[in-house]
Image (tube, rainbow, N blue to C red; front, side, top):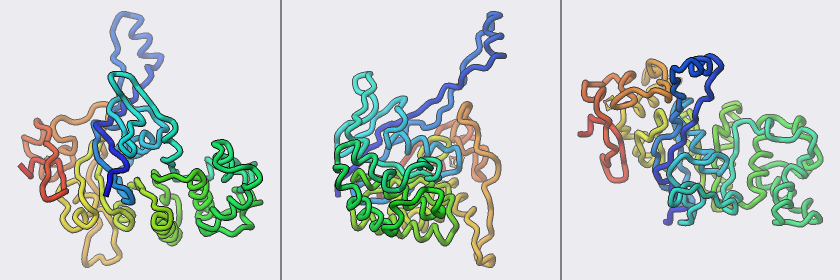
Length: 332
Ligand code: SF4
């Protein structure tokens, strides 16, 4: 098994623009420090060809920002990204470089395909636009080409001449998937791609993703706030908290032997119908601001196992069992 993607010490900061009040403060000689949001903080992991890696964490943990950097939509602040061992985004000898040829090989599917589908374009044109633009197909072949892709995502040929508003949410997501597939990607970043769908439709779309992986030899980075969804689809799981990875392991290992208190808290927060077996316990407190993260372990203000050491010292990210890594002082 070879690594298709290497994420190497990747970070992303956003500088908050200063408001008028702060500009006035600066005019009177009091220096106002610009606020920096540390959205993704020194993240490293690899993805093996054909694998589904699930990235999970609460809203605001940096997982979507990470996905956008990997898909080439956002530039990195530091670190680098390799695809098939070829450097395609990030810093090399101090200069930012981006190889846009690799962007076609990495496609992204968003939560709400409707907002990214042109309401005035027919489906045939939505799906064929990018492959014609990149000269992957000729205009005369587009009908046959789109028919084939619609078939792959479970939509009939009659969808070709219709407009986005004529489809249900689940069908629109299939159109979004078809559009991503149209440029023959190898790697797909799914960012909350089923979050807006009804639960029964979610299962159908997950099955479609898994079938396409098999048929087209795809690799996925599957981003979700819902650890139950990740359990259904991922081979391996990356757990993020406040821009950092706190735990990584195979899906079987994470769900049978979670190590990090944050992962355990996420799992306790999954509601179940069998109330005798498990009580629904949401994680206490709010996720802290990435502008001013807590000292020591970022999770300490919400962790029921927190000690003085957790407040002062940052835990190191260690292998706690083969290919299972976690960042917690309890493993010291
Ligand atoms: Fe909790 Fe401390 Fe472990 Fe952080 S290092 S997760 S605060 S026990």
